[in-house]
Image (cartoon, rainbow over all chains, first blue to last red; front, side):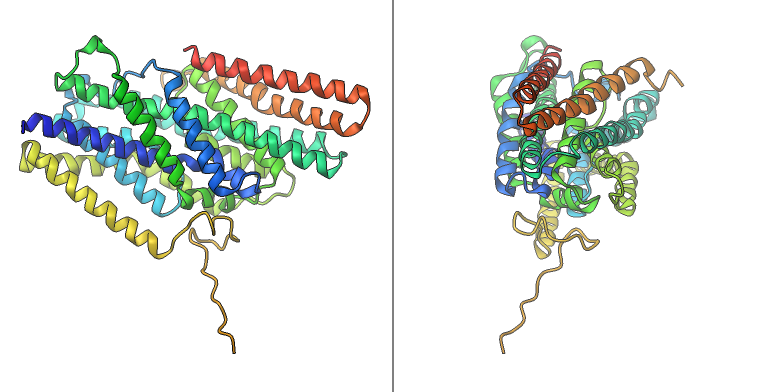
Length: 384
Length: 67
């Protein structure tokens, strides 16, 4: 078989794997609050989110050029760089999932590509100012904007409905919450599946399989949409638990206000071209919903751990991306890429097995927060 | 600082998301107040509120997809 074809196939499989982790890592963004408040049963919530992600992926077919354009010099982007960047993003997504930390998949991918570019083409190929204005500054502003909107929203929601009866209020906010969470899922599919479509299209163009003017082939759209939907359905229960239970205790009106805020900020930023990460927005909204309800408790140590993770997303993913490129380059050619691919596969499998030892799933996702991602297993007293 | 922060886009995002995120959430809350009042006028007000929310959602989807 042609070595270039092998290389292209590995890049496509890696991109779809990244898309898959993007899905299960971000299920929490839309559905953590609905699961925490009991508005939707856990399995129903992830199924609904998966379907909406799938539909969302088809809605806006104007593929964003690629994630890498504007961040690194286009000439520096080879298939191996794309591959190494994806490995960096994948690695960061899996590690943060293991620790149950919501973290931006876009930032992880950008970090991976930047790291691979730095080591392959040197610092001159990376646009530092672009990284500051398009990645670092938005990372700080996104949660702040969402905190503001969700705090105001939650406050208004509670003040306006303080006199009305429990039944109408509970049912109303339950439906409102499901509706607003659905909008977040739809927006996620539209924005995030595009990243993978863009990367696969870029790889196809780079390998000469399709011409630059050809546009995204249908099978790329279908496979990307399927990968992100499957990932969403699998559910990143560890992240869902942190966002839904760890940050603050959420009631239905708060969940409704948080998801409305997330949906509004995501829609507005995508319309006005301000690149905010879905994950940062949704986390900020959950914090805001805790602040807006008077005396609600926000666990700032959990929030602090997330902020720390966001700060090291870029360098950490860059380090893995650089390492992946160096490894592939050392061995050389399609064989090098294949060896790195298999290594990454084995390490991911190891992490999956490690996570199985203290599992978080649909059954225990809502257990009492005890300061750790995995709930303390209930020990059954032996019957005397 | 303006080289690093697109202030023009930022304030538009903030205003739009406050209106849509907090504003529509408030309008939705008002519809619940109307529904629970039991009066015909309350129900009519609630219907109007829900109509505003629905219009906001359609507008949001439209502007996002029409990029």
